[in-house]
Amino acid sequence: MPLAFPVPDVLPNDDGWGPSATAIPPHLVDVPFAPFGKGDKIGRASDWTQAAYQKFPGRYGQGQATAVFNFFHNEEEENFHVVDNRPVKTNKFGPRRFQQNRFQGGRGRDGRDGRDGGRGQGDRQKNTKDNKQRQQWQPWNRDQQRTQYSSSVEIRPDWAVVEQIPFQSLQKLSCPVGEAVDVLKCGELEYYDKQFDRITVKNETGLEKTARAFRSVTTSDDPIIRRLASEGAAKVFATDAILTTLMCVKSSKYSWDLLITKQNGKIFFDKRSDSNLNLLTVNETAPDEIPEDRDAINGVQQLALEATAANQNFSQQVLVKGGEKYKFEAPNPFASPDDDEELASCAYRYRKWRLAGAGKGADKEDGEEGSGALDILVRCEVDGVVNNKGEDALISIKALNEFDMRAQDWRKKVESQRGAVLAFETKNNKCKVAKWTAAALLAGAELIKLGYVSRASPRDNTSHVILATQACKPKEFAAQINLSMDNAWGIVRALVELVAAREDGKFLLVKDPMKELLRLYAIPDDAFASEANYADEPAGGAEAAPTAAPANNADD
Image 1 (tube, rainbow, N blue to C red):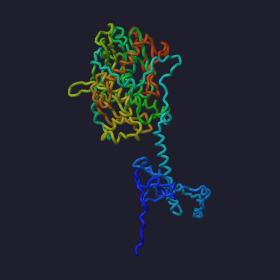
Image 2: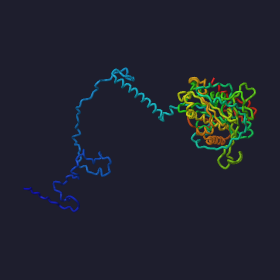
Image 3: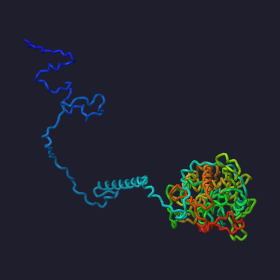
Image 4: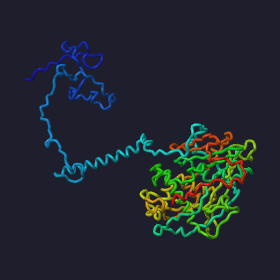
């Protein structure tokens, strides 16, 4: 007989679903109620709606459920502690004793310690190498690792700073100039010996020391420039060595200084008698800095003397001695019948450029109101002449010298990878190579003859050999090394205008030894007792002008 099932009373709810508030049984009043499904788990362990288990809280309806059925610890459980009865793990072999080969790479007595020791040594070496590399790239250590170079001249406290010129302000300067005008050509040249073009590493030739004298006369001591200045040929006067130093100032790293004299509307750029501009730099822009050690053969000073001597010796050795000479219209202005020594083969071209100014006054003649043009006269040097297919061409002869065979062995690469060797040397000697190129363009040379001169022995800076030679066209080479003559002339124009705006006086332009910065000082006329301004003296007094000593003695 089936059991009877009484149907409970169902009370209607006009406000919504489920029983109404008045129809709740008395024993269920005030009992917490939360909607849940029969498949849901009650408790924190299975309640995925808790904030601790939500990946995206506040999204997709998470965090909206009530926490009625959450499990909470009672207060008495705070004093409950779990007791760990597991045994403590101890070292099976006890403390490690000293082993003789612990820090050696070989195997030990039991084999395993030897391998561990080898790995430990390798790890220490690797960590040391990583630390050195990390310190190398730390920006706060760069200034500490940099070599501290000294200034080329001692700055006196009574000299006032007129202007400070950062290199960054020279980047976008530009001043196009026209063709140069030859004012005078002096001296005579010897022809280039083409046998040196066939030199290779296998038949290298020793570098001979020349007995000829090299004259390095500054601007104010040049009798030709003094005469042309008195005739009003130009407003600004300089030599190619001084002018190229200004043109390539952005690539310079070492300190140098120039004397600038403004008198009666004329500006003269000079160098001191003991200026370091008479010497060539070596690896000035190389990543590895050269130490400033006067006694070391690989220091800045000794390398400069060595490079200057090698360059002068090479420029005379590659010429044909006692043969026909290429003569200009005037004799050498620095030759005298009383000279006991023979002068080096060198000719001078006094050339004039017009630095066009911006504005309407650029096309007016000098001296007219509103004129922005300036004429600059430069003494340019030429080293030799080469005959190509019956035509004579002026050339500039320079030598690159190798002193560190570990950086790049020329004896292995100069023949098969000559372009790479030249690019490497250009990178390390950017300022020197740029000055050579700019001087060749100023002098109107059609070729630059480069010689690769290396030490016969790495520890001997007095004996050298010629490994190879190479010819470059100045315009093409300037494009390869990113030398812009418009920018170079723009730098010269800016410095000239800076001095022209001042009153007559004497100034000193100094390159900061540690910063990319130029400083212009106003100095008294007697700041350097050995330096004097000869702008207004008669030209006849130039015969006794002091000259620089021959630099080839550095190789003796």
